[in-house]
Image (tube, rainbow, N blue to C red; front, side, top):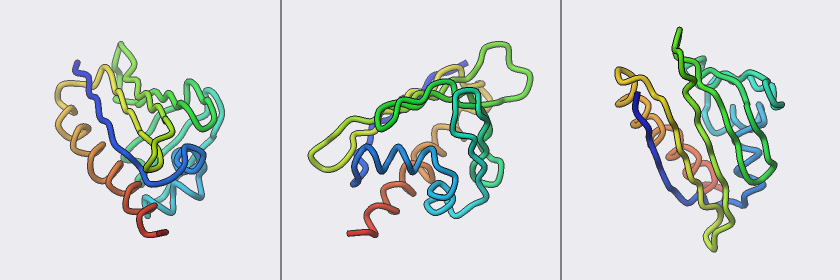
Length: 128
């Protein structure tokens, strides 16, 4: 099992970024893919046509999202924690993803950077 961390700045407010990560219609806009979101604790989600699936463990509006990502019959849950902090350029996004299966690590790490974070930055950059 491996852990991953990423920091980025998104050119939008924490409220906007939180909405972009938790509201089905907004997620579908920036991913350009089929999305399902039950935005509540223990609610399940699916993004990028089912490439990412899991459930919400914690939701703190405009501040923090904790998700369990599903990777088959894994004993220890894979947990993605996303923290949002106000930044002079928008939102400082902090991602910490723990217990990633070794065989999935490279794909997950690359996926966080592009398309996940890169698509968010591009989505909000286009609005300027």
